Image (cartoon, rainbow, N blue to C red; front, top):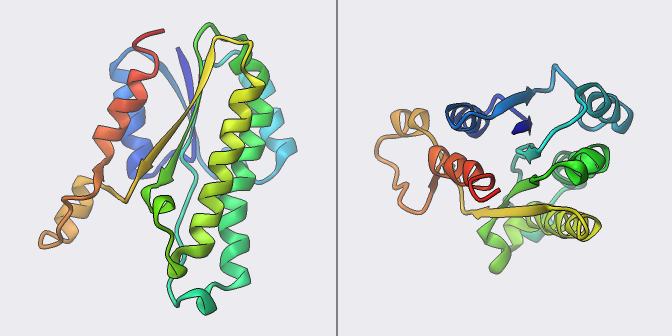
Amino acid sequence: MRVVIAGAGSPLGDASAAALSAAGHEVIEVRRADCDLTDFAAVQALAERLGAVDGVLHLVGGWRGGGGLAGQSDDDFDWLWTRIVGTLRNTTRAFLPAIAASPAGRFAIVSATGLARPTASNANYLAAKAAAETWLLATGNALKDAPASVHIERVMALVSDADRAANPDRDYSKYTDVRELAARFVGYWAQA
């Protein structure tokens, strides 16, 4: 399978690329320098250039928050919305034909367990994550007649070996290891 990692270069992107490659998949890593995912025309050109693909892992994200509800700035909201929702809209619209044509098309995002219990300090972030989940579910509806599926992986936070080395005294017991999440991604095509 050919899998696009949108937002590659992060610890999760690196772990996902390694796991997918080890499982025999062709991985196409898309970093900011490769394509401006906030620009639909650029993403559409990328999709046309790549042609047939079987999956898109949308790993573009980021976090800004704190300061209670009053501290949720417009700048932070716009930044989060563009990165989390805008880039997802662009990638799903551009790659929809390829995913629909695949015998095992998959779209996936990483979301937040905090959606179950939103806090004022995370209002901007969680509003964007909720919108991203809704958009991806609507994408699933657009794929209802295709052998394709959408996947939402909710995590509290991610952790890598580098994080553990940098902060060895931190409690990571509720975090999801990037390799564990990468293995879940590989599993999307195990039953295909």
